[in-house]
Length: 185
Image (cartoon, rainbow, N blue to C red; front, side, top):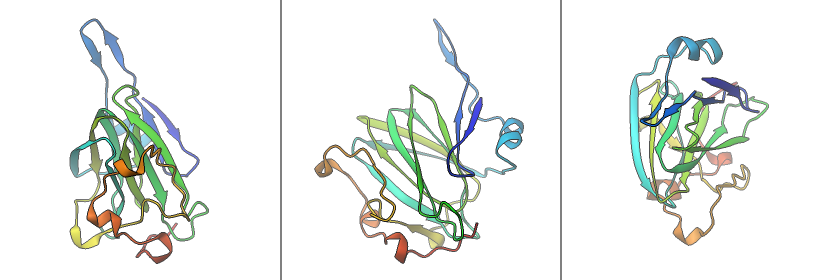
């Protein structure tokens, strides 16, 4: 696998080596020793999967400490624009984001560390999204940010806003300036 740190420290793009032949393909998606060599030590405790249709936007989500989550995300069917926003107080990149297209074709993964809000927008007809986390889902610590906060300015590649599909929770999420945060850099 190839590990590339993004312009925001701690966020990594991981590209697997894909071996293709007439039968199909093979690739490694997770290798603990290699991950720890590049990114650092982690203890993933839960795997999650979601299926969403075109226009679905999930996020921007995070959990407060001590239940904050690091995520290793990838798409096994379809294509999404995946976004990580730095919400660590004192970080030189606070409020900045990384956006990466993840698809079944490019097989990229994105590592999003604790202290980041995360979301994705489905660009294909359907997307199956899977991810590992290092803390279990804890509803009492779950928080979110407005996907369209102008202070962050994410370009979600939204072609037709009328086709955008958000949960009620995500439509009511606060702006970054009003959000409850407890992360430090």
